[in-house]
Image (cartoon, rainbow, N blue to C red; front, side, top):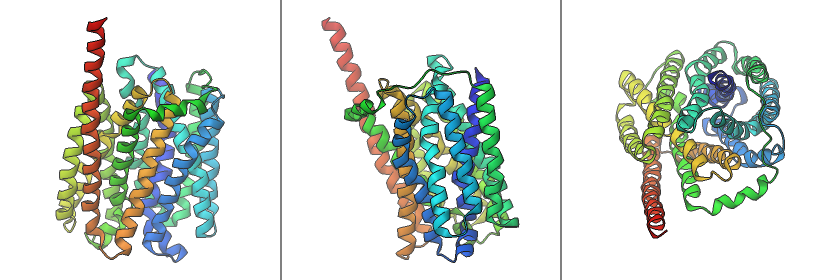
Length: 391
């Protein structure tokens, strides 16, 4: 059943390339449309907010569809959206095209996560999700650096043109390799009652905060490297490649850790992440240490992603479709708030070196919520054991 998972990974590769490629092209886009770096960064915020708002709406709209057909429809939206980005003549129309492209994002990963876990034994579910999301991380190894180099050499539009055939290939791999799936729940809208469960809300909050921590720094990584570390645009592409390698390893490591010990792994990774963000502040002015720091930071950041996605499916087992989709919305709401937080700090004059500290504070809040969630796990386990003894 690894072959269908690879088909999902190809689609994730295309979506990840489209989402993250903006970071490497931010200075180019700002120059092209004569806007500031923080305003160009709003393209990240707009995309992420579209995922957040659009994910549950699209999920409800496609709820009664056979899941394979839903995935094909979503990849069609993705392909047309990137075509519109390549053709957009103004900043406003590029923002609109990004919003349209983002509509497929959350619903695709939400539906794709359910398809992935249904293809493997229960004990391998987190690893199945990690394998699908490996396409997202590989996008940062191959797609984003290649697209950034292409955009710097031939203009940012060429980067979006290169994504269009990826969308076509992804749709064909789903059509040929993914087996027919059952229809989703026709009562999806009633599944929103899972939001009354504290553990589900805690996962969504942790996903939001972890993503906000990532994007507060990563959105502005290109201008930070060019102005603080004083490296050339060519070196920025190499750093993006290293970041991609880090998050690819981190994603697979996170899947393995989640299947081993889920919440202790999440808590430990957040502690490590806070330390790495603090270190990033000190090494940013130096090229080699900065590159190493970004690689390790990306590894730790994405190692927490698979456990959180796996946990939301477990905690909301009565409504996995909606829960998985909402978690993608939470990740992208974090993308939007993180990019906005970074933009606000820059606009206020704090400079690029303030961003790692802001991210560390956000991660600290996520760590507190993780500890609370872990304690609730123990309490629920004790309650179950007490009930069994009384029975």
